[in-house]
Image 1 (cartoon, helix red, strand yellow):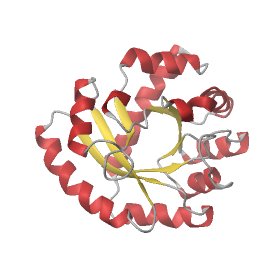
Image 2 (image 1 turned 180 degrees about the vertical axis):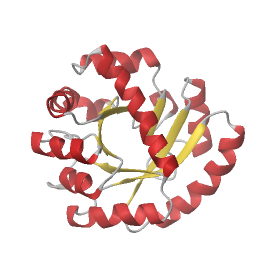
Image 3 (image 1 turned 90 degrees about the vertical axis):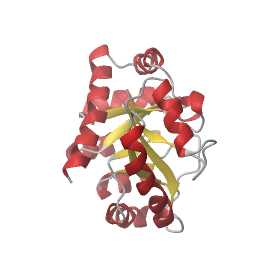
Length: 217
């Protein structure tokens, strides 16, 4: 299993990156990405903290670690430039905090994230068919989330992705150790969103593809 959406005490999580790594490994994950909430005020500091840690800990932890960001509550007009800045600062995985029903997110955030070329769009809520078509064209992955408050629209996201060919991944978006759910639970959430077994398996492959693409940059 791979989880490309992990929060720690560096932003809003309840555990240090090292603790999150240990919980993830114990739950059977082979790779995780720390994607802390950032905006213009803390992006540089966050990556400067994460990048040296993951380089060292990946050598000894028995789990692959990646340093990323979740661009959060940034005005849509600034999101494409923020994605570019994050890449320049060394972020390995870039996602954008999408228009979930569980939060107040500016209209246009989903579209800006897709147009700006984020690696994936976290919990995109009631994403439109037109936005999903663009995500398919630009190979921006849409997230099916196991986090309860963001999962209200999983079924809609899965349906729109199936209609448009937009690629999907599954993440936990976790803040605590017990948010790293097991494989059976991940599969059940995917099937509960209306995905077929084959579509679920493709989400697992898609997470690996994001990492492979990142490694080629």
